[in-house]
Length: 173
Image 1: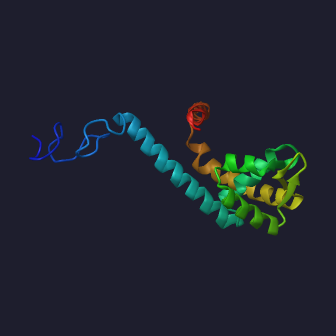
Image 2: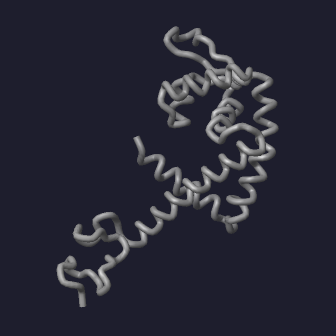
Image 3: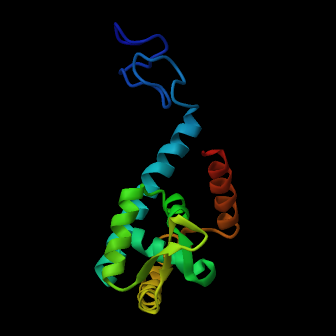
């Protein structure tokens, strides 16, 4: 029997069923299975990123966001991208990206130059020194990914996870 003053349908003991918020009615957030999946994804992805960042930074001095920035440049034609493309792919604000590029320029890992086709835009190019730093950090990072991510996947899981994350990404602005 629900406690006095409990919302209709609340179980005895006062705790609402999964997916419900006290006093807000049923299914406010999502169906229980979807809510559980969302919470697990959100919490695990945040913990994973924090763990990988700490491990990489401890072993190499390079943080995960800078590693990802260098990775985008490694994969780009001529190891060069427009700052606007970097900002979009990294989900960085313009001031944050400008700051990070400044830090990496001082280390000699990237070069910022004016875009010849558009004087308002800037290009970021990975230097040979940046490539060397990326490769050294990449070996360490690859081992960390293997331990906490890849080893947890069963055969076929990577393809399913990729399909799901791309479907979610396609729904985002």
